[in-house]
Image (cartoon, rainbow, N blue to C red):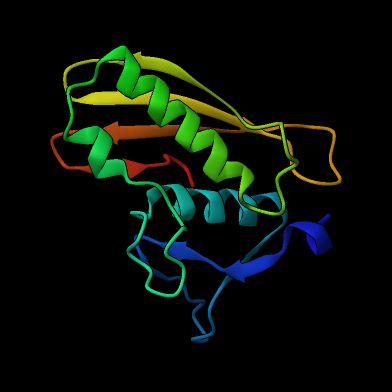
Length: 138
């Protein structure tokens, strides 16, 4: 499945991860897809000038009142953006609210990678105080 899901440079705390010899570490297979989806969902839409349609506009949701309409819109945006990755089977992205409070919204995203029968589950945490989205463990 590595061939289908890819190989990429491992990013840790927004920087390349290196081995003691100085080479960059890589990530492959399902871990590569998790890393790439977390980057895609954490990138503000329009912030990459050559890829204006990449990412979601998280700040739009975090700065607005978290009404059910806004939460439903965010959930749908996450599903659509996850399926924009060609390694995710179309129609398989499902996103649901796990918990929410005044500052934090936790969502569960489930996708089915191409060529696989086991779904991939991610937890997304949106924090309105910091304006950040993170995927714990990615």
